[in-house]
Picture 1 (cartoon, rainbow, N blue to C red):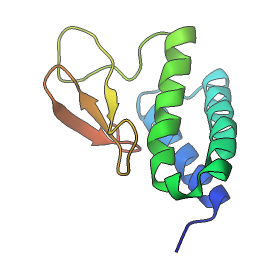
Picture 2: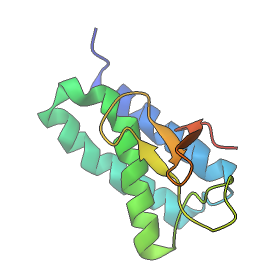
Picture 3: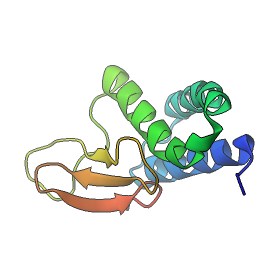
Length: 114
């Protein structure tokens, strides 16, 4: 059974906010970026309801892109000395994870950063 669009969007919002909070960057301006990303994905989900499983990863990537433009790289990799952002993998798929591309290692599921 398909999840209703609003439930999917609320889940994606909660997962990304959990990661932002875990990294202590969930201030009001950044929460607004999350809200913008969720609003944009609402339209996308309306057009492609079968893509519901992809929404958390897409919202995470959207917020990451918005943060890069406004604030810098996020989230930084905890595994490497050289600062670089983690990537969301799969780029378009279910069960998204934050991954260190330098090592090819999953760090945490989206929503589970420490």
